[in-house]
Image (tube, rainbow, N blue to C red; front, top):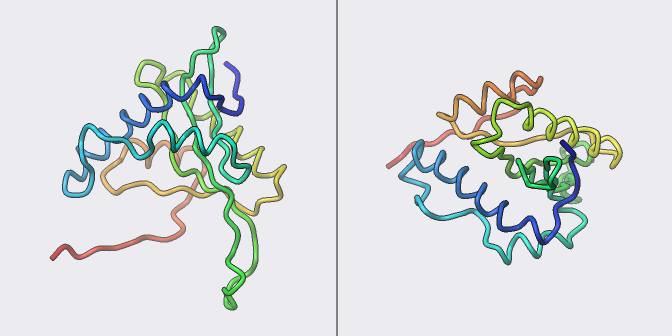
Length: 157
């Protein structure tokens, strides 16, 4: 397995994986997520490929088939945040491993790669969000050493 920056030829598989992630979320929160849709379109992903602050990493097999991805974004403390220490973080906007490749440590390899990239970029931390109810993902990230930083709470009217 190799991990590299995504290329335009990878977009169809990335879209397929985005659909897999959406279906997980739609089962957990059908009041928020619409089954059969994706977070990003082909054009959205294509546009991100050229943006240095929005790297997309893909794990590929020996035949260069995409097994999983990590869509990331470099974020910095806003200049007008007078009450926070200024630092840079690498936010994992979305991470998915193909259903057929799960259990082969693809997700762990992607996460470790993202951590190393973040260190090289001078980031203070790597962050991501997990929806409540996505117990498998939550356990996976905790197994990699991640800890809860903050929680967003809701009251549905």
